[in-house]
Structure formats: structure tokens, C-alpha cells
Amino acid sequence: MVRTGAHAYLKYGYESTFGTAASTIDKKFGLNDALSSWSLTHNRQDLPALNQVTIDEYAYGQQQGSIGVDFTLSNPWIFKTVLGDPSTTGSSPYVHTYPHATNGINKTPTSFTCEVGFDGASGDIVRTLKGCVAESLTINTSVGGLVSCSLGASYGVEDAPSTSLGTAPTEPTVEFPYTFAHATLEYGGSTLAQVQDLNITINQSSALLYGLGDHQAVDAYRQLLDITGSFRTSLLNKVVLEDMLEQISKGTSGTYSDTVGGSPELRITFQRSANEKMILTGTGLAPTDLNYDGFRANEPIFENVNWKIKTLTVAATNAESTPE
Image 1 (spheres, rainbow, N blue to C red):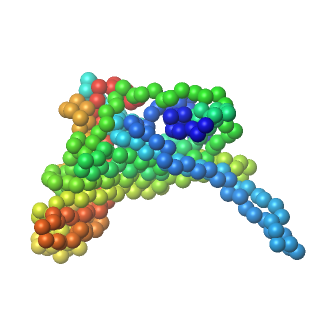
Image 2: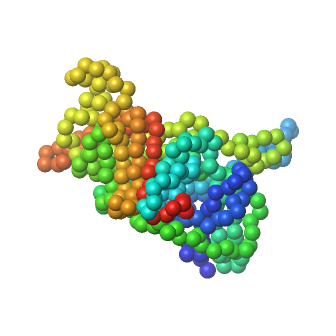
Image 3: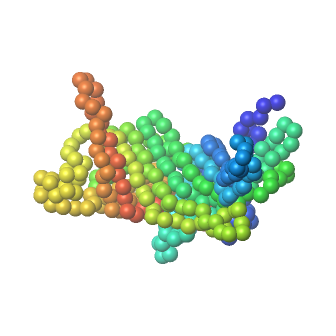
């Protein structure tokens, strides 16, 4: 009998030591979660030999896997994978700020363990993916749609599968399906109207580290944090155009500025209520390019802006005193 996603579960937990399974694996990525891609390689090398045209032997290199997880944004806890632990202030509601207000952003990746269970027709399969590190987290929404998230991660440690099927992840207390109607965008200190879609990608440029004597990863490290995004909105004025021009000192004001400026420079808000929301605030905003869908009779004109920021802060307000 063919099995479907109804016969599988996915959950994760944060590790204390890279590559050692988390002591508790019970977290859910978000609503409508799906394991959208999954691969594992052992980097086989084919060894030929003189005096023959067939392969003589195989040799094997590093074990490395990758996963892609898609889900609907419903709580803020996933930000730990790319920004580290938050600091918490306030009292009912509490504000969880990523990265930590005192310790700052983690200079090493936050590793986690994923457990994938499959209730097979002739036998159960439980795979434990250890040493997972997020490569990127993308959040996007458009008019009429949900706030969708995609997490890409690599992992370097997987042992033989188990046949002891576990349970589905524990649903977090904070769980609400955010949609486009809960989102607002501020650019250069002003709230943009008639936004059609927006996107932000946090890429922590993580990589697995291998060493002699072990085919599995022994650690992970992160490189330059790269935060980019885009939005599409009705063409109403020349604000973004001036930002593009003035960054090469050719704008109408004749001044140079390496960032857009304004307070906030960039802010994306997902708000259910005054006591439950997520505010993403960026500094060091600079547009990358500006383009248009075209000018056609009786059709709306939209401008498409791709941008980059230097830093990002996420302030999540909810009723939970500690992150789940």
C-alpha cells in the first residue's frame, strides 16, 4: 500500500554539542510543515585501472546531507537557527529579541537535530539527522497568500536508521497562521502602501567542517551574514529612484549616502494583535536594483525593488516567558 505524508512526522531539537543528538527532539517548524527536499551523499569516487575500461574500485569521501523545510510562519522560535538565542524582557506580554541584546549574534552556527519518522507498510524507518546547521531562512508573502517560510539546512552526521517509531512534534503554545493581511512594510522611515509582495532571505553562509580520520562532519562554521530581500509595490513617487541615484551622488540633492537612512530604514511587521507580533528591523539598507513590470494602457504600474541590509533584529512579542 502506498504511503503518504500522513504516515510521516518531522521534528527537531537544539544540540548542546555539534553532532551529538539533542536531548529533547520535540519542536515543530511551523504550521503546514513539509519536508520539501532531502538528499544524502557519500561523495563516491570511481577508480579506474590501466588495461581495462570498467571501474576497478570505489572510494568514499565525506558524508553530507541537505534538507529543505517549508512551512507557514506561525511562531518566532525558528529564528534561533540563524540568529542564535534571544534575550527576553517584559512581563505578559514578553518580548524576545534576536539576536541576544547583550551577547549579540552567534559567531558559530546553532546546530540542531532533526528526526524524521516513516510508518512503512512493512517496517518503520526513523532517521536522525545530527549536526544540522541552517544555511538560509526565507520568508515571503504576497496578496492573497500565507506568510511562507523555507529553511535550507545541511547536516553532516547520520548513523544507521532506527525502527522504533516516535511521536509527532509537540505543538507550540504560540501558533497562529500569518497571512499577507497581517504584514506591513516600512522603507526609509515611511510605511509603503499597496505592497503586492515582499521577501526576506537570511543567509548565514554556514559550512560543515571535516577532519582526517572521520567521514562525518566534526564541526560547522559560519561566514559573512548576508541579508537580502525584495518587494513589489505600486509606483507612486520617486523615492526609491532617488535612493538609487543618490548613492552614486547624482540625485537631485547632489549628496552621497551609502544607505537609505530614515527611522526605521527597513521594518517588516507580522502582527496578530498588540500582544502577539514579530517585528523585523533592518539597518544599513541599500537598494540593489530597481525595475518595472512595464507601462501598459489601463494596467497598474508596479516597481520591483531588490535590497540588502547590514544587520537585522527580530523582536517577537507573545505571552511565553521563555522560548519554546
